[in-house]
Each structure stands twice: as C-alpha cells, then as structure tokens.
Image (cartoon, rainbow over all chains, first blue to last red; front, side, top):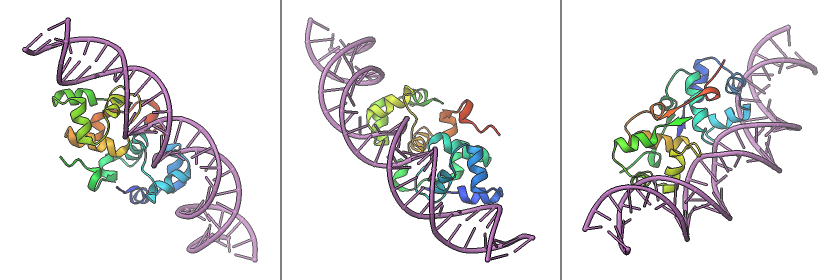
Length: 70
Length: 70
DNA sequence: ACTTTACGTAAAGCGTACATTACATTACTT
DNA sequence: AAGTAATGTAATGTACGCTTTACGTAAAGT
C-alpha cells in the first residue's frame, strides 16, 4: 500500500507536528505512516482524508493482494 | 462507527461464509465486523468496498470523535 | 557559534484486529 | 423427527497500530 500523506501535507503547507495535533495522535505516528512503517486504522485514515478534503481511496493506493481477486 | 456490511451483503445475496472466502478471512471476522465487535483494518475495508462496488465512506459511517473537530 | 524548526530513530508497552477451533441456535427442508 | 444451512458464542493466541519518552541530525536565522 502506498500513501500520499506526505504529498498532501506538503500541498497544504503543514508540518508533521501540526498534522499530529489536528489528528490528536503523536508525531511519531505521522512519521511512521509517511514512511510506510505501518498502515493507519480505518478511523485515522478517515480523519486524514477529511483534513485533506479527499476520499480515503485518494489518499491510499492499494496494490496486489490488497485487492480482491475473484 | 457504524457499518453497512450486513445490509450490503444481503443486497448482494451473499452468506457470511461466501464473503469470508472472497476476502480470505475467517467467518468469525465477518461476524465480528457485522456485530460491531471491532473495526476492520484499512486493507480489509478497501476489499469490502471493492466487493460491494462502493467507496469506503459509503460502507462505514463515522461519528463524533471519529471526525476531525478543529 | 548558538538557537530554533522540522524531521528522524530507538525501545518498550498496551490494546485490538485478526486467526483458529469447537460448540450452540434457529429455521427450513424432507 | 431428523438433517442441513446460516448465524452466533466462547476461548485462546499472535501480530501490529499506536503511545510515550528520549535522543540524533540537518538546515536556516540571528
């Protein structure tokens, strides 16, 4: 899974700390998310999409086995 | 957070087991998600939205502190 | 040179999203 | 009445999302 968190954050001219405060999470969480160290919970993904005024699907790009195959 | 998994599943005429197979998760996971026992991971939410041909935001309804306040 | 700002790493701990297995219940079919 | 399909509950275990605290680095301002 790829994320556009860093790109969106820069577009909005925000620092990691500002974003973490808006989200009420630690700055570490933002760093880890941007670096792809782990994936956000559904609620956190939703909050991020709200802040960046886009959909969850616009913020995260799913690949391979993260998609349904049938 | 509310989910419309059960409603969508019924609309599509699927059993919990059929859905669990498509998702490659256990049937217990479906039951727990539908009953609101816990929230799906982002990847699982995405797969569910794919199967029901809707967006993640259409499948899950976020309430209160699950939204950004500012 | 020193400070400040923004970004990064490391480590330990907690809660929860899942898995797995086994058994119970309800309703429909025959 | 007995069997089967669909749904549910319970118990235990594992992996990971996220926290907290503390320290490291690099660039820019003064």
